[in-house]
Image (cartoon, rainbow, N blue to C red; front, side):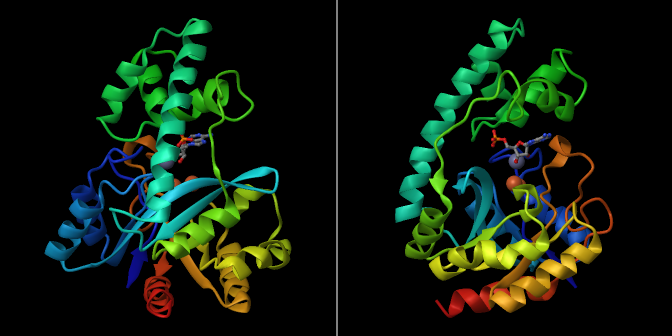
Length: 281
Ligand code: AMP
Ligand code: ZN
Ligand code: FE
Ligand code: FE
């Protein structure tokens, strides 16, 4: 059997509800999933209830954008529960930083002649965490661009005219706060960091010492050889090789729950190893 430990719902920048993601997971024959919405845990209760009803395993999670060296790294945090906790409190601040950033993005888009308001973007997001893909959706609806990718390439991506940075935790702090909050931090899609696989072990050693629990080895954007290579590196480092599709529904229409672009298969042990690592903390 297979699992999917990286999915986004309507509680961030996905278009499917947690219940729809669980239904898709069951349809794909998965034995378990994690929900990893950006910067919030608001969909966890709903998703957990749907997995219990469907009889598949569940891990609550979130995806944070953190600072590592001079770059942005995405960190998945698993086993983080809604409610009080050191990382949960910091996530509130991160959401405020995101809200400030969003009003600045709206202003910048208007200043270059794109007629759009933050209220319209928030309405598209449906009252949950607003991200750049929601800006892209409004720009598509108003025919400024044809695709989410075009909105990023022309306006929203880092280095483009309407990109606005936002406050981020340092990678080390995210790992420590995750640990202090009962969670396990895992580096998401490391190929976005501009390193080669042979550099990973040395580069991430410091993060492993701080409590890093895994690296996303099974991810659709890599060649199958790289997935196996990262899994090997995880094994050498004594951490878990996790994996997932990064499903976003219509915001990333080329990706499906479980199978990604079609060739992804995240083995069951990614999830059972993560449960085992959690029970040992
Ligand atoms: P935000 O949370 O507002 O920083 O937006 C980040 C999300 O935007 C990521 O999780 C991706 O889903 C999406 N994204 C980032 N870069 C691109 C890109 N170049 N093309 C399409 N989607 C992107
Ligand atoms: Zn996203
Ligand atoms: Fe990501
Ligand atoms: Fe993601």
